[in-house]
Image (tube, rainbow, N blue to C red; front, top):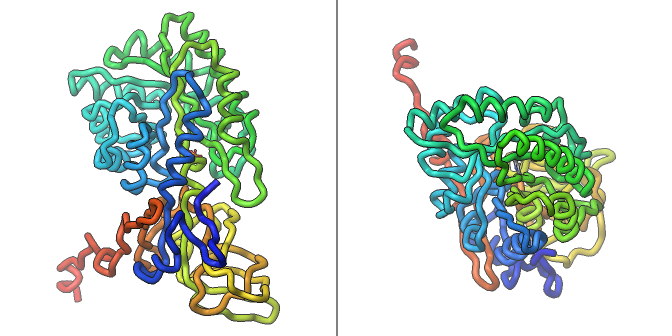
Length: 422
Ligand SMILES: *Cc1c(COP(=O)(O)O)cnc(C)c1O
């Protein structure tokens, strides 16, 4: 459920006309519905009822500080994967005691920054990282709280680029090696406070079975660790619940919640969740304008002013995004590719799609781009990154201004030796 709906023939975000925003901020722009963000956050949080749990929204899905602040105000913690995301989290006012730090390649600087900040815990992904965090805590004269991310070797049945819990993936420590790491840390790494276990098996997962399978394996491990006197207080289930882009039928958070609780109810742990896509995915759209239409011998193209640099998912994963007209006043249909201005044939939003008979100047809405949309955007082809706008009922505000040409070359320089060598 989201709040992008037609009133009469015109697409609205909550109570605001999208065409009106386009008039004022230009195109392309990302548009987020505050009401949808909040609704999705609570639907997810409620799914675990009274079970002790912390929802740590996964910053990488959509890291705009306006979006982060929205969730923080609802009581959310944050899951981060870099020092930059920690900086964003703090700027948005996140409580450090609800921040968890995941990722396979944390640098010394990032580790020290997070220890000094006093985050809840690191999700540690390798034996070397465990030692490095211990050394950093020792240097800083303090303790660092850690979980080990265990790779449970389950198939999440999703796109190979976003599956993370298989043995062949780079993430986590294999289950049978993890115990050894915990015991080693307990005996030798005196600046670590070992408090949890973590597993995150992938993204856009559309059934509950892979989550249940991963939890069954993790549960066995927790029992063994407790037998070793290692007190596991937190079980981080990760994120990964999918959404409907096209015809997928992922479980509702309530069903997902039931499946998780069924596996964990007798475990005496605080659960941590790191949802990204399921909360923000359908709460955002990309609004773009048709620049040209053209017909080749057997193909129609609709050329719009947004491109793969704004939204990479179709090019990267071949993923489907619905495309809606902002004004439903068209008569007639066309089967066409929707493409952007970037000089790559991979620059498309839709292929052979049945669409209204769009013409130059029409506005289109690319749906379900709240997650991994702006967050994955770039300046490729020296295109200014799009504006981001948030709506709350009848109010709206730009939460990231459109980049300028000055932004495009910020930080670059022409070294003197080029002139000297001329
Ligand atoms: C990407 C990621 C998430 C969020 O995944 P979604 O599919 O967006 O829910 C959660 N945890 C970790 C460690 C991640 O890397």
